[in-house]
Image 1: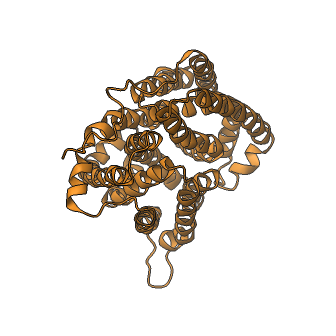
Image 2: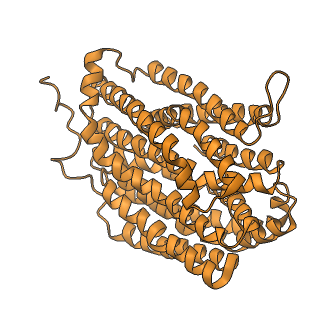
Image 3: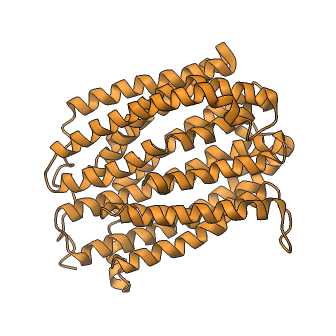
Length: 437
C-alpha cells in the first residue's frame, strides 16, 4: 500500500511541478483547488470505508461469496449515484466556494475552470477509490497498489502533454493537469472493475444489484460519518488557506506547495491507516480485539520513527527541495520555514489517521468522526487563524505542529482505554439478513 499511495500522491507533486513552470499566479490558483479536490477524495474514501467495513466484517463472520458480491455490487451502484450528485452540485457552486476561500480575479477564473473539468469526470475519481477499498477489505493490498501505481505513472506521463501541448494536442495550461488526471482515472476505473470481476466480487444480475443497493443503510451508517471524518481535514485546510490568503500570493503559493509535499511525505502513515481498517474489521468480525490493539501500537511506533526521519531531512534539505517547484525566493523561504517545524508532529498525525480508520473498520465511524474532527476542526482550523494573526506564516507552522502533537497524545490515551470491540451485534453485519428475499 505504501507504493500505491506513494504513486498517487506523486500526481499532486507532479501537478505542482509542471504548473509551477507557468508562474506563481498559476501555482497559487492550483493551490486553491487542492483542498476542494481533497474534499472530493475524502467523500469517495468515506463511501469506500463504509463498504469496506461491511465487507471486511462479513468476511470475518464467514459470509458466503454471493453475499460478498452483493455488497460490492451495491456499493459500486451507490458510488455511481453519489458521483452524479457531486458532479452537478460541484459544477454549479465551485466558483462561490473558491471565492469564499479568498481566490480573486484571474486566479479565481483559472481555479474555477480547473475544478469544473474535475467535476465533469468525478465519477472516475469515486469509483476507483471505492473499489480499491473493497479489494483491500478482502486482505488484498497488492492489486489495488498495482492499479494505483499504474494510474499515477500514466497521469504523470501525460501531464506535460496536456499542460504544454504536443503535436495535435493543444496547450491547455493548468487546466491540462485536470484533463490528464481525469483521463488516467478513467483508465483506472476500467482496471478496477476488471479486478473485481477476476475475484468474483461482482454480481452481474439485476436482482443481486437490487439486494446490494438495499444495503445502503449499512454502508451509509458507516460511510457518511467516515466521509465527514476524512472531509474535515481538507475543510480545515480550506480554512487555513483562507487565513494564509490574508498574507499574500507568495504565502498562498508556499502553503499550497508545502501541503502537496506534506501529503507526499506522510504516505507511509496513510498506508498504515489503509491497512488498519480491514485488519481491525476482519479481526473484529472474528471476535479478536487483542490483535487490533497491537496493530495500533505498531502504527504509533512507525509514525514516531518516520516523523523523526522527516524532521531531520526537511530541516536540512527543505529549501533545496522547494527550489525544484518554484523560482520565487520568497516562496522558497517561507515554504522551507514550514518544513523545518511541522514534520516532527507527524507522529501524532499518523496515530490519529490509523485510529480513525480502525474505528471505521469496527463499524464505529461516529467515534472516528469525533476523533478526526477534534484534530482538524477543533485544533487545526482555529489554530491556523490564531497563528496567522499573531505570527504570520511562522505562527501557522507552530499552530499546525501543536494541533498534530496534542491530537496524537489524545489518540494514544484512546487506544489505551477503548475496548476496540465491534459495534453492537444488533447493528453489525448479519450474513443471512437477506436470505429470505
